[in-house]
Every structure is written in structure tokens, then in C-alpha cells.
Length: 365
Image 1 (cartoon, helix red, strand yellow):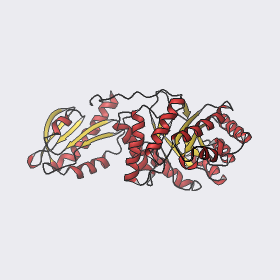
Image 2 (tube, one colour):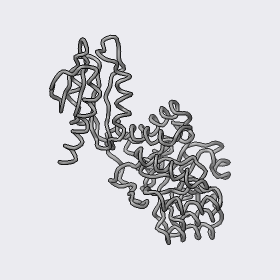
Image 3 (tube, helix red, strand yellow):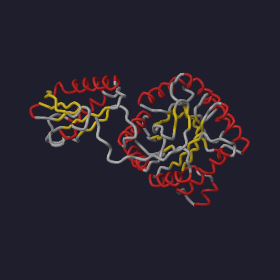
Image 4 (tube, one colour):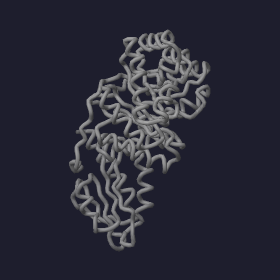
């Protein structure tokens, strides 16, 4: 049970690109991705981290391939995971060829940085032969020298010019299975660049605020930048770049999409910050419920409100709701309807039970 969103987001219709079994662009769901931070040559650790990232809800995972040992390891890694892998390539065109031949679903490259047209042609051939897409990854921190000289500093126009130049290098080789990013660590620069690029390109866009920082600051910057673009209808796949566990990147990415009603996965908890009116310890209750319900993938709304000021109203709009009452007597709501009183000590177990029942009901229907 949920209310209709106040605002519908009209996404720009972009081309559809296949990355393994994940379709990016068009009317397809906005995908969430992250990137491993293990040594790729440590195959066991990399596989473990990829599986953790996927379990949290990632659709795609990027893996760095800085040397031949890494691209050789990529083949074994891909055999042992069930999620499309994007190979992150910089400068050396042979790494891109090796990654495509090892089974990568996508190559993240800047064509202009990997050599002359003959080298680009070889990379494109490898991508075509192995059904591999390409992401043109433009970054404000690594723009081409002549573009920097022209614009004097990274600016939206510089990022877009670099992106269009690199797109043309691939189109000249009759290659169109690509997506594009124009990232910066500056929120305003990123937003402006993506808006400009969206006006002149129909390729799917990968959104991100690069090098956003630690968990709190990076999550906020990413939410503002990516959220603003998504509200504009721009963006087909996202990555939250945090100096933190990659699993946290996926968690924040999915929360951004849930907040905008663009994707629905798992339990969406509406909870109050708590105050002196609370009938139970809201903060601790929410923490425990987040942990106990982390395994739920079916979209469900749950309100946990400490008192009757806003509690009944929120509960009327969620699948399951709890409103705090006096002396540990809290009210349970199911599908917006006041159902029965529950003592605080029994509340968490009952909520978990009701969520699991709701999952069965939804999956059955």
C-alpha cells in the first residue's frame, strides 16, 4: 500500500544498451552499480566482494584492470559471479581487448586516451566480437590537454566536448553500443554537464559525482547531484562514489531511487526522529528492524512513528505501521487499518512477522 507520488518523473527516452542480461536505457529500470576495491589479482577476495555487492542490490559491478595480470584474473572472476562485469580501463588499449575477450559485459574507457585510430579499431573489434558494450567515461580531472587549453579549466562545455569527441571516435568505427558519463567532484559542474549532454545525445547516461568523499559527505553530495538529475528525467544508471565499503554505495543508490519512486526494492521505512512524546525507543527500534529486514527484496512500506501526532496518518499510507502509545501499548496498522495494540517488548518480532506475511501475500498475487 502506498500513496501516489506528488510528482511523476518523465524520463528522457534514450537508446537501449545490453550489458549482459541487464538492459540500460529506454524504459528499463535505472540500474545501480558499484566498483570493487580489492586487488583484481586476488580472485577469491574480488569474487567475495562482488557477491556482497550483488546481494545488497547492485545490477552491475565495475572491476579495475590496470595490468595484464588483472585482465587474466577477470576471466576466472566472471566465471564465478552472476552479475555483469564492467572492466575499468585506462590508457592501455590491450587491457581493453583482453577484458573483452575475458568476458566483460562492458568496457569503461576514454577512446581518446588509449591511442591512435588503429588501436581504437582493435578495441572496437574486440568489443563487437565479444558482445561487449563501452562506457565513454569523461572525468573533469582527466580532460584532454587541448580541451583544457581551450576552456582554461574544467567546465560543463569542456566535459561535453570531450564526451562528443570520444563518442564520434566509436561511431566512426560503426560502434553504437555505448553509454556515457561526464563526472566531476563538483555537484554544480556535474549537473550542468549532464544537462547539456542530455540535450545533444540520446545514448544512455551513467550518473555519478566522482570522488564524492566519505560516507556522510559523499552520500549527501551524491544525493543532491544525482537526485537533481533524476528529477529532471536524466539518467539510466548510477554509481555512488564513496570512500567506504562498496556495499554502502549500493545501499545509498537504491535509497535515492526509492525516495524518488523510480525503483522499489526491499522495505521502505518511514520513521520519526523521536522526541519526548515517543512511546518506545524509535531510533533503536528502526536500527534493529533495518537489520532484521535487510534480506527482504519485495517492495513493502513500513511506518515506525513514536506517538499519535503523525503516526496514524503515516500508518494509513503504508503496508504496515506502528504508532507509539502510553505505557508500552502501541498500535499496529495493517494496510492502513488500525488492527490491535502490541506491547513494546513484542513489537519488533510482530513487525518482522507481519512483513514476512506481506511478502508471501504479494508474491502469491
